[in-house]
Length: 525
Image (cartoon, rainbow, N blue to C red; front, top):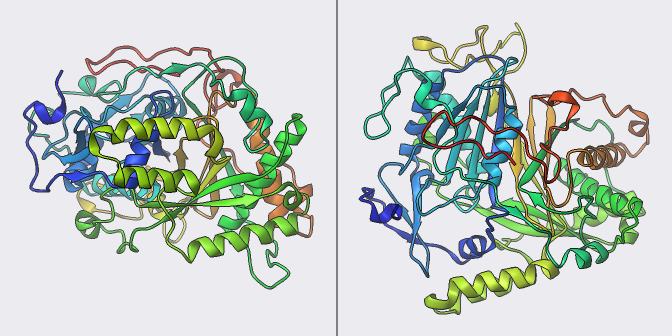
């Protein structure tokens, strides 16, 4: 099979674009065993029509060139914006597999950006309500752009009066049979052995002490729900901690306590904080999103929030240290990749000649990773009630129907989007990413981990440490510390047979989805 740009794919009027230095560093950081992806898992309380949803996905992809872009060039990569997606990015799974398992596969399987679109969408049928998994390669979309894309897909679905036909090679199916299976281009999840730097990483005091032994395959996700804090979060100098500050400080505190309790060192911790660099978008209507330019690529800058062991021994001091750094970071234009590694990578991407640039960048990133990678990342997308719409029963506003026929969007009883979880990925030695978004007055948090770090049995212990740190920092009076750990509502998709939502045990295999379509089976990690 040839590359997409060599197989007769028609190009759109949008000209090709060479990758920016920041994009070149991201491309060099991508590994088959640890692909850079971001995702959204959307929970509903009813059933969606897969054919109709697929049509909505294609409609939105035709509006946004980046969702159907392909890479070309063996030495200096560039985006080519083809007129039509090179393959079908939609899949439908209805054999009882958990949506979180499907989401793990979509996020863990490498993207071949030369042949397939940077977007994967799967509808997972569940007895308690369908779940929608949307995953993109981080080189093409960041978390905010992906969230707006998923919101637009749902908006088009709500407004669609009936079944839509899809012209071309990927026309509408006769029934659901041709829809079943995973999207095109989802190959096996790559199994990798622990890095030779693993011992150094454990003893350095700057990374999370891993609990797994042996090989780790792909990513796992552990969702949790946190209530918004009610205590006074005012610092001694009168400044207030934002929710984002609270999440960052809780991550520092939880990682320090995790390492200490497992006999590891806890020195300087550096947590990556993404910052949106795109202009503020217009109100999220279909018309404005159609012409929006802010969805064309990754617009994320990065800042490092640092703490020392002395800071973490005093929560008030830790809070002040975090606020000092976040205020400074928000007042500047952060680079796409922070720190020394980012500066060196940008210089290399700008000044090294094209024939050697890609290879040297990959070598440089691989060499610098064990020494310069951050401890973890905390990405807070903020409040996104527009994803779910009003949630609840027969209140004054009611609930938005997921599909209402010719009536348009209406507050009537019916299937509704009830929750959404944001996910991101990070390979070892970092291996930990906390994705956060607020929906309906609660914080939906996803502990995203590489399976060389945690297994499904160990990640709940870290999640509870994070919850305790969040409650402690959010209520300095100490009253929240006595609250039971389970006061928040449980996340969707409970695991079967008592297993964690994080997926299979490290190195173990779980059942694969049947090969129901020529697009391939689900290589579950």
